[in-house]
Length: 310
Image 1 (cartoon, rainbow, N blue to C red):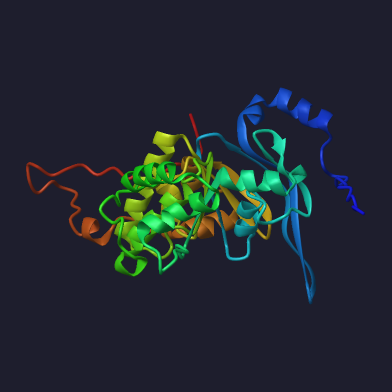
Image 2 (image 1 turned 45 degrees about the horizontal axis):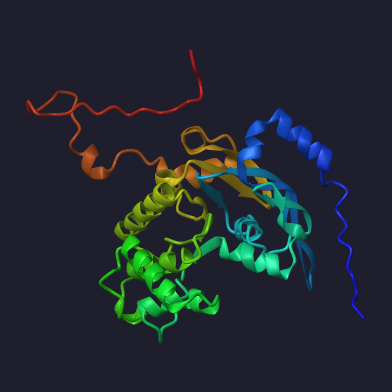
C-alpha cells in the first residue's frame, strides 16, 4: 500500500495568478535564474523552534555573480542551501527558471543537483585519490562512459590550471590548488549555477585573488550564475555584481555592490563594511604631500559615494 502525501502551500505563498501579475509588472522576474518567494526556514530543536529565515523575497539574475553577506547566524548558509534543496524551506517557494523545485520528487532532485555545482571552504577532497580521480568520481557514479569521462576531466583540469597535476594527491597540493580541484569537480556535470560556501576563507590573500580570478573567468566563459556567501567583504567587492545583506534571517539591504558598499544604509551593512573604509594604506599615506616633490609625482583623488545627485 502506498501512502500519498499532499503538500499544502502556506497561506502567505502567492498564487499562480499573483505570480503572473508580478511578472507582468516586473519583467525582470521572468529572467530570474533563481527566485525566492516569501521563503521561510524554521529549525526545531530541544529548546524549541528557531527561525533561520523569514519573508525572503529575492531574485538572482541569470549569469550574474551574487553575494550574500551577514553576521554569524544571519541565515546565509540556510538560504544558499535551499537552492539545491539540501535544506527544505518551511514556507514559501524557490523557483529555478520559473519552476518550483519544492514539487520535485527524488529523481528530479538528483537531476537538479547535477545542474547546481557547489564548492566549500574545506575542499572535501578524498585523500586517497589523485586529482584526476577526485574530479572523475562524480562522473563514474553517474555512469558516464570512460572515454567521455577522460575527455571531460582533461578539459576541466586545463580550465582550472591543473593539467600538470593529474597524478598528484591532495596532500601534495597547496590550499589554492585544492580549491581548484574542488571547482573542477563542481563543474563536471556542466552546471548552470555554482554555489560557493566560504570558498576562499581558508586561503591567503594572494591565493584568494587567484581563485576569484578563476571564478570570474568561469562566469564569463561558461555563463554560469554564481551565488556566494563569505565573511570577507573584499571578496564581494572584487567579484560580485549584486549583494544582499541578511540579519536574523531577514533581508535588511540589497542592491548593486557599488551602491551598497559605497553608501550602506542599514547599521548592519555599515558594521560589516567598516573594515573596507579604513583610509589609505600606510605606505601610501606616508608618501603624500601637498606639493609635488618630483616631476613624476601623481595626483591622488579620494572619491566617496554619498548617494546625492545634483
